[in-house]
Length: 300
Image (cartoon, helix red, strand yellow):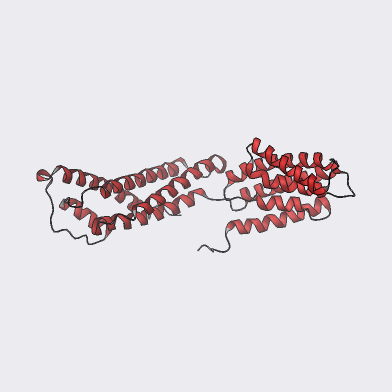
């Protein structure tokens, strides 16, 4: 069972702090704020995001290091020097489209400008820049090697949430003519799609899933989309339309709910609206049956 207070990201952050602290002592004989800070803020929830963020922040570190070094030679009052360096850094990060790296770049400028009187600015800037890069690399490696995120697990969890919601929403629509739950079902579907897209970006890096398993996920996603589309169509139909006995029997069995109906319609003698409704309902039942049947098999 998940602990809501102590997640895997918390554990990884604590681990990377220990590693960063040890490495900074090894390299500098004293703790390096730049190294430890960079390692902490670069822990991400996905491997690909960690790589992308790491690359951008390395670039941001170089920008911050160079700008910090340049402005540290400008003979201005320290506050003005720092403000100038920060402003230039923000502009360059925006131009390079690395806005998420702005924070670490600015931090490095501040570290370099406040500097050390016992070390030449150029040497100090180089050391702090290197420390920051090492921190980023440590965070990326920890995220990749220590309990790497499992995007397939997230897809499974999202799929189970969708199926649970779909069963409840469709049941309420058929039994009480309530469609308010459709918006929540739509959000569940959007979340499932988002988790699936995230998994797609992770697969080239992790390479842990078989093609058969991936194809299966695609089928479940397509079936989930059909459930939502048909449920939405049902919600738009006239509430006075009648259901066939066959659809009613399948629906009550599938949902395990006693859906009361006093009148049924024979398709051969039905109105056009009844025919459209029952056709759509049959499609909804088929799609819902598929996702509900597969949900227990699609285990973590």
